[in-house]
Length: 403
Image 1 (cartoon, rainbow, N blue to C red):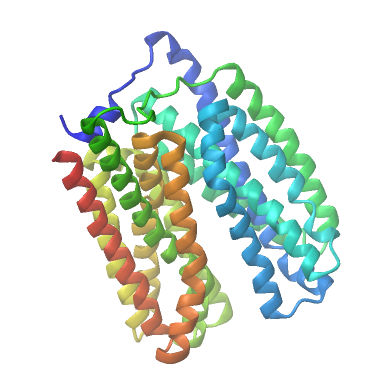
Image 2 (image 1 turned 180 degrees about the vertical axis):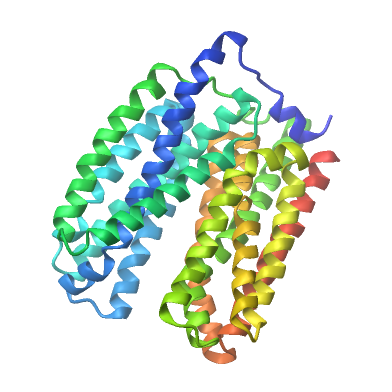
């Protein structure tokens, strides 16, 4: 029997648990949306906080790296805590930490203090991501439906709403007032979602995380570890592209294709909207084509789109490329995390997430370095190259799981 099938069929939930799934799904969807909403609420206030701490662009960049550093640092330990205490309890605790931490940045008055606070914020964000994704992996196994993209669509929608609301209230509330209200509202939402999640836990899928006791189990364990790393590489390549689009996409339209500021912003909005649309339709696409075909097809679509967007001499073709990139990338990260979690539970989610965040952290500065010497259009081709690599890694996963 293929390795992936052995692991995924290790445990199936009893039929009596069916009535609990709607409550658990609603609660998990709420946590995903809250995660995106809180993060977007912080992002739209960065300019105001930058001025408050008198940070230069370079120092602000270092402070912002603390978010990623805090997230990556806790992902491994949080995966182990999920195994010990359960995904749902860790998710609720991480949400409380994230809600409290989001109110702290506007209370700082130096770059050093801001960096320390952002380490805490990043830790809450990283812990929340491992917790909710691990819980979602268990839900997918229990429901026997590939609904992971739908959960990530909730995150995307939460981010879009958070950015919109935060932007509209910029002239009405100070950063301290707005992020303070965000913290209070987040704690209320956490309490609302925590009750059904803790009262009606989704059965945890059984996986063999015990130390190997024979040569055969040792070989199987090493095979699982390699698959998780390959899926982490898929997540890394996708996150590299997402980070590049967020930081450099609009600038490419403005600088290289001379788009008006509003059109450049609309280009990124088009990319974000198509990514959300792709995730909303992800469950049906997985059911029809299977996860590996969707990973490979998405990588191919995003590669073509990014190549067109980077090399196009005309604005309409570049915008069409942005649309394809959004659709292509939309389900790669959710499916990679889902597959890693199906193989190794919270530890698999943590490993793939750490690699994924590595790509998101590395992407913008690497593209900046390449753009300095080769120009931004050529630098953006690195996104197409890595996304194509994610498709190759997905094919390697399929070969190993069917061997």
